[in-house]
Image 1 (cartoon, rainbow, N blue to C red):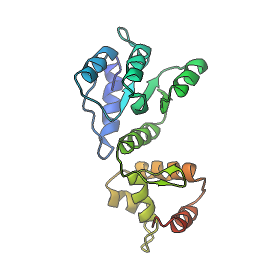
Image 2: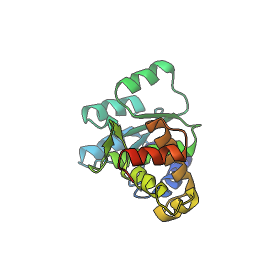
Image 3: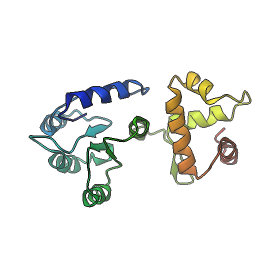
Image 4: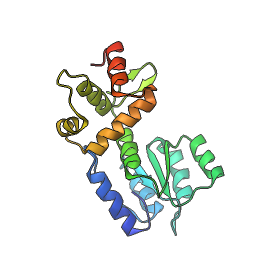
Length: 192
Protein backbone atom coordinates (compact mmCIF):
# COMPACT_ATOMS: atom_id res chain seq x y z
CA UNK A 1 0.00 0.00 0.00
CA UNK A 2 1.19 3.45 -0.94
CA UNK A 3 -0.10 6.46 0.98
CA UNK A 4 1.77 9.39 2.53
CA UNK A 5 -0.47 9.36 5.64
CA UNK A 6 0.68 6.87 8.29
CA UNK A 7 -2.76 6.76 9.92
CA UNK A 8 -4.37 5.71 6.60
CA UNK A 9 -1.77 2.98 6.09
CA UNK A 10 -2.37 1.74 9.64
CA UNK A 11 -6.12 1.54 9.05
CA UNK A 12 -5.65 -0.29 5.76
CA UNK A 13 -3.27 -2.78 7.39
CA UNK A 14 -5.94 -3.58 10.01
CA UNK A 15 -8.48 -4.07 7.24
CA UNK A 16 -6.15 -6.41 5.30
CA UNK A 17 -5.54 -8.50 8.44
CA UNK A 18 -9.23 -9.51 8.37
CA UNK A 19 -8.87 -11.02 4.90
CA UNK A 20 -7.89 -14.66 4.63
CA UNK A 21 -4.82 -15.26 2.42
CA UNK A 22 -3.96 -11.54 2.43
CA UNK A 23 -1.19 -9.65 4.13
CA UNK A 24 0.35 -6.23 3.81
CA UNK A 25 3.83 -7.20 2.66
CA UNK A 26 4.98 -3.65 1.91
CA UNK A 27 3.86 -0.16 2.83
CA UNK A 28 5.28 3.02 1.36
CA UNK A 29 4.69 6.74 1.78
CA UNK A 30 5.64 7.54 -1.80
CA UNK A 31 5.14 6.07 -5.27
CA UNK A 32 8.86 5.94 -5.99
CA UNK A 33 9.34 3.34 -3.26
CA UNK A 34 6.80 1.08 -4.99
CA UNK A 35 8.49 1.65 -8.35
CA UNK A 36 11.88 0.73 -6.84
CA UNK A 37 10.39 -2.46 -5.32
CA UNK A 38 8.92 -3.59 -8.64
CA UNK A 39 12.17 -2.82 -10.47
CA UNK A 40 13.83 -5.30 -8.06
CA UNK A 41 11.41 -7.98 -9.28
CA UNK A 42 8.92 -7.96 -6.38
CA UNK A 43 5.40 -8.03 -7.82
CA UNK A 44 2.48 -7.54 -5.38
CA UNK A 45 -0.82 -9.39 -5.95
CA UNK A 46 -2.66 -6.15 -5.23
CA UNK A 47 -1.64 -2.52 -4.83
CA UNK A 48 -3.57 0.14 -2.91
CA UNK A 49 -2.47 3.53 -4.19
CA UNK A 50 -3.21 7.08 -3.07
CA UNK A 51 -3.16 9.70 -5.84
CA UNK A 52 -1.92 12.71 -3.86
CA UNK A 53 1.62 12.22 -2.60
CA UNK A 54 4.35 14.86 -2.29
CA UNK A 55 7.25 13.35 -4.29
CA UNK A 56 6.15 10.70 -6.80
CA UNK A 57 2.39 11.09 -7.08
CA UNK A 58 -0.25 8.58 -8.13
CA UNK A 59 -0.32 9.53 -11.82
CA UNK A 60 3.45 9.05 -12.22
CA UNK A 61 3.19 5.71 -10.40
CA UNK A 62 0.23 4.67 -12.58
CA UNK A 63 2.27 5.44 -15.73
CA UNK A 64 5.00 3.09 -14.48
CA UNK A 65 2.48 0.38 -13.54
CA UNK A 66 0.95 0.65 -17.04
CA UNK A 67 4.39 0.03 -18.60
CA UNK A 68 4.78 -3.03 -16.38
CA UNK A 69 1.26 -4.33 -17.21
CA UNK A 70 0.23 -4.17 -13.55
CA UNK A 71 -2.81 -1.88 -13.71
CA UNK A 72 -5.12 -4.88 -13.26
CA UNK A 73 -3.78 -5.26 -9.69
CA UNK A 74 -4.53 -1.70 -8.68
CA UNK A 75 -6.94 -0.20 -6.17
CA UNK A 76 -6.94 3.59 -6.26
CA UNK A 77 -7.98 5.14 -2.97
CA UNK A 78 -8.12 8.94 -2.88
CA UNK A 79 -9.97 11.78 -1.16
CA UNK A 80 -11.40 13.22 -4.34
CA UNK A 81 -11.32 12.09 -7.96
CA UNK A 82 -12.78 14.30 -10.65
CA UNK A 83 -15.04 12.67 -13.27
CA UNK A 84 -12.50 13.14 -16.10
CA UNK A 85 -9.80 11.31 -14.14
CA UNK A 86 -12.29 8.60 -13.12
CA UNK A 87 -13.15 7.98 -16.77
CA UNK A 88 -9.46 7.99 -17.76
CA UNK A 89 -8.50 5.49 -15.05
CA UNK A 90 -11.40 3.18 -15.93
CA UNK A 91 -10.49 3.33 -19.64
CA UNK A 92 -6.92 2.34 -18.71
CA UNK A 93 -8.28 -0.87 -17.17
CA UNK A 94 -7.84 0.01 -13.48
CA UNK A 95 -10.41 -2.25 -11.79
CA UNK A 96 -11.08 -0.40 -8.53
CA UNK A 97 -11.25 3.34 -7.90
CA UNK A 98 -12.60 4.43 -4.52
CA UNK A 99 -13.04 7.60 -2.53
CA UNK A 100 -11.51 7.42 0.95
CA UNK A 101 -15.06 7.66 2.32
CA UNK A 102 -15.83 4.20 0.88
CA UNK A 103 -17.13 1.39 3.08
CA UNK A 104 -14.31 -0.89 4.30
CA UNK A 105 -16.19 -3.99 3.03
CA UNK A 106 -15.91 -2.73 -0.54
CA UNK A 107 -12.13 -2.47 -0.21
CA UNK A 108 -11.97 -5.95 1.34
CA UNK A 109 -14.04 -7.36 -1.51
CA UNK A 110 -11.78 -5.66 -4.08
CA UNK A 111 -8.66 -7.09 -2.42
CA UNK A 112 -10.13 -10.61 -2.31
CA UNK A 113 -11.12 -10.39 -5.97
CA UNK A 114 -7.62 -9.25 -6.96
CA UNK A 115 -5.95 -12.01 -4.93
CA UNK A 116 -8.10 -14.74 -6.46
CA UNK A 117 -7.73 -13.32 -9.97
CA UNK A 118 -4.10 -14.41 -9.71
CA UNK A 119 -5.33 -17.99 -9.27
CA UNK A 120 -5.73 -20.16 -12.36
CA UNK A 121 -8.52 -21.99 -10.50
CA UNK A 122 -11.04 -19.18 -11.00
CA UNK A 123 -13.99 -20.78 -12.79
CA UNK A 124 -15.80 -18.95 -15.58
CA UNK A 125 -19.49 -19.83 -15.68
CA UNK A 126 -21.59 -18.28 -18.48
CA UNK A 127 -18.78 -15.73 -19.08
CA UNK A 128 -18.85 -14.72 -15.40
CA UNK A 129 -15.73 -14.96 -13.23
CA UNK A 130 -16.50 -16.59 -9.89
CA UNK A 131 -13.63 -16.59 -7.41
CA UNK A 132 -12.71 -19.84 -5.61
CA UNK A 133 -13.98 -18.39 -2.32
CA UNK A 134 -17.27 -17.35 -3.92
CA UNK A 135 -17.61 -20.88 -5.28
CA UNK A 136 -16.96 -22.30 -1.80
CA UNK A 137 -19.65 -19.95 -0.46
CA UNK A 138 -22.12 -21.14 -3.14
CA UNK A 139 -21.47 -24.79 -2.29
CA UNK A 140 -22.04 -24.16 1.42
CA UNK A 141 -25.30 -22.32 0.66
CA UNK A 142 -26.48 -25.46 -1.21
CA UNK A 143 -25.75 -27.91 1.62
CA UNK A 144 -28.69 -29.86 3.07
CA UNK A 145 -27.76 -28.50 6.51
CA UNK A 146 -29.15 -25.09 5.45
CA UNK A 147 -26.31 -23.15 7.06
CA UNK A 148 -26.91 -19.56 8.14
CA UNK A 149 -24.52 -16.87 6.90
CA UNK A 150 -22.94 -16.82 10.39
CA UNK A 151 -22.30 -20.59 10.24
CA UNK A 152 -20.82 -20.28 6.75
CA UNK A 153 -18.50 -17.53 8.03
CA UNK A 154 -17.31 -19.89 10.79
CA UNK A 155 -16.77 -22.77 8.34
CA UNK A 156 -14.87 -20.55 5.88
CA UNK A 157 -12.88 -18.90 8.67
CA UNK A 158 -13.87 -15.35 7.74
CA UNK A 159 -15.88 -12.53 9.27
CA UNK A 160 -19.60 -12.51 8.53
CA UNK A 161 -19.04 -9.17 6.73
CA UNK A 162 -16.83 -10.99 4.23
CA UNK A 163 -19.68 -13.47 3.65
CA UNK A 164 -21.97 -10.51 3.05
CA UNK A 165 -19.46 -9.23 0.46
CA UNK A 166 -19.50 -12.62 -1.31
CA UNK A 167 -23.30 -12.59 -1.29
CA UNK A 168 -23.57 -9.04 -2.68
CA UNK A 169 -20.90 -9.70 -5.30
CA UNK A 170 -22.61 -12.89 -6.50
CA UNK A 171 -26.08 -11.31 -6.55
CA UNK A 172 -24.66 -8.53 -8.72
CA UNK A 173 -22.61 -10.79 -11.01
CA UNK A 174 -25.37 -13.37 -11.47
CA UNK A 175 -28.26 -10.89 -11.51
CA UNK A 176 -30.13 -12.67 -8.74
CA UNK A 177 -31.96 -11.29 -5.71
CA UNK A 178 -32.12 -13.99 -3.05
CA UNK A 179 -30.49 -17.00 -1.43
CA UNK A 180 -33.04 -19.19 -3.23
CA UNK A 181 -32.01 -17.65 -6.56
CA UNK A 182 -28.39 -18.48 -5.76
CA UNK A 183 -29.26 -22.11 -4.98
CA UNK A 184 -31.27 -22.41 -8.20
CA UNK A 185 -28.41 -20.91 -10.21
CA UNK A 186 -25.95 -23.35 -8.58
CA UNK A 187 -28.18 -26.35 -9.38
CA UNK A 188 -28.71 -25.25 -12.97
CA UNK A 189 -24.95 -24.83 -13.53
CA UNK A 190 -23.79 -27.86 -11.47
CA UNK A 191 -21.93 -25.68 -8.95
CA UNK A 192 -23.33 -27.37 -5.83
